[in-house]
Image 1 (spheres, rainbow, N blue to C red):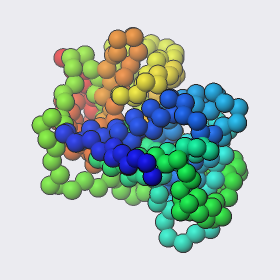
Image 2 (tube, rainbow, N blue to C red; image 1 turned 180 degrees about the vertical axis):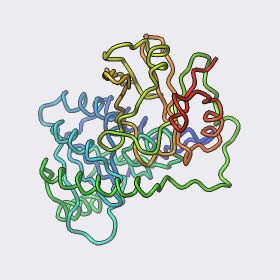
Image 3 (cartoon, rainbow, N blue to C red; image 1 turned 30 degrees about the vertical axis):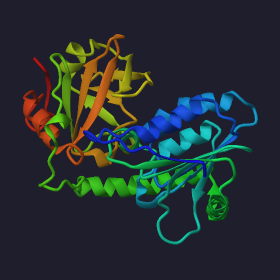
Length: 329
């Protein structure tokens, strides 16, 4: 091994070094032809963050391939992410025959004369790439790490090539489990002693929209949320169904999403970044310099102090018991 580069970042624990290190190496167009990814969990928001960088890397050379080995333990992996990876021509393997929990977070950029390996605590999820306190090591080697190659072969033996039929089986069982959990009122656990530093509690700006997410939302995987009609008209300037440009805070990837206005005066928007495990949570929207909208999910389990502060500002309700929201004055 020529170099051992820790990607730890301290200070206020704003950890993005794993993502930045990996993306920088892919953008540099190093002489490697295979990208291996081994993850305990992948979500749609995590893959959407990596997807354009991986696609550009692969497009530069016809011989390049992307191989992913993804676990399904505990149901954290999002079936929508698996379907998207499959449609993006990733050689996707799902772990099938093994003992214990498939728990690695490893990326191996493999070439004839150069190998880059990231061994990390990060999952390929929104929080793993941008929010969590993580630690990763970037290893560079001129030769194939023999133990890593052996391990990769063992993982492959325990896996099966993914198909839409296999993903549908996982999706159905996971949705049934999530439905039972939500019906039982089980929400993400937050220890009452957890506190945040003052630097970690930024306040919204004047004009920002803050909206509570209700425990039971409609739509597959709870990604579809109902926007208060007044907020749709006042903040988003939406009076009939149309596409709006949105991006998650800190991401360079902007996309168009349809905000649908129904005949019963309800307004709905579907966000891939939203997970059942985020609840209870809020969404904070702000306008960006391009005329689009930037949003952030504030989960009580991750940011309890900020969650409580923002929720206290949400004094508007359509009716008693409905979601709380506000446009910051």
